[in-house]
Length: 401
Image 1 (cartoon, helix red, strand yellow):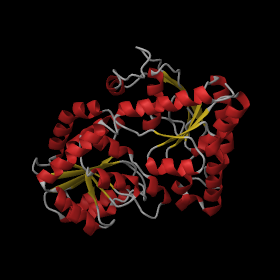
Image 2 (cartoon, rainbow, N blue to C red):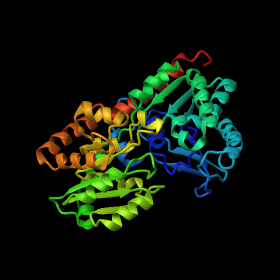
Image 3 (cartoon, rainbow, N blue to C red):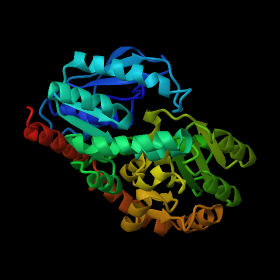
């Protein structure tokens, strides 16, 4: 698996790597440590929560899976793509990535995101190895606001050229799958589902954590955990909660919008800024809440395709969602009636939606539907099966093998 982040761990890559290990694969993750903050080499055992959730998975072929090997390329770089920032470091990263991939001698190369796919494609052509493209986001759209028209146009063309040349494309949702099918890709939808057992075990800790925060049992607690970037629209819910009595909001994460969250928390005692939340504690925050919020900026091209990781935590815990009318997540919430879609991405619309969600009977019905989705369509066992089907397909049909 090829990653352009340091695997600290990367939630989706971690889950997929250990699913494959359970199916009998030996998995090596080659990642980019841009801050030089992590061990160059490590091994990771399967997380207990994932092992328990997949104990009866039909695709499991080994009792004790091999640990996932982690190799980190240590080249210092930032995250902002541009001629004076990240762009000059990419050729060195790609060269090192190719060399480490060659040392691993893989039977399959799994590229996470478009920025590792060129290396996977070249290696696959040279060595007769199938390539899996994990198209986790609309990459060119994600960078449209910061990288400039020339770079994003080149990325769009690269995506369209490489997608039909991959042996399998993994998409996070229906909209993204349709986009890559239109490009000629062979697509499997692999959701970032969470094990429900994880959320059940976290429920008691969540209740205790809620009491520690001083949130009354009768109050409505709304939660958001994720990147505090400008494409995650937090302003509507921050303003709405500040106007409503007996409604609390906790916001976890860091990023450019952190000062706005801190200012809102200073002005309103019912808003709590948690800072960065470790992955292991995300289930506590979600199970402690009554509603999970996710807002998306409609002007960001990537938002149209979004099925956020946090939504799958909400499904696993049986928590209704409150979302802006943007992205695939809004379509799912509206269709499945597992939450409330705001009429607009404004504070007034958020306030109206929160008034509705104060209704205990409505909220219970929405929560039951969310929990049902977490145990059926968005179940981690279904995710593992789809991933294994994609792998079985590329190994069975690739004419070079």
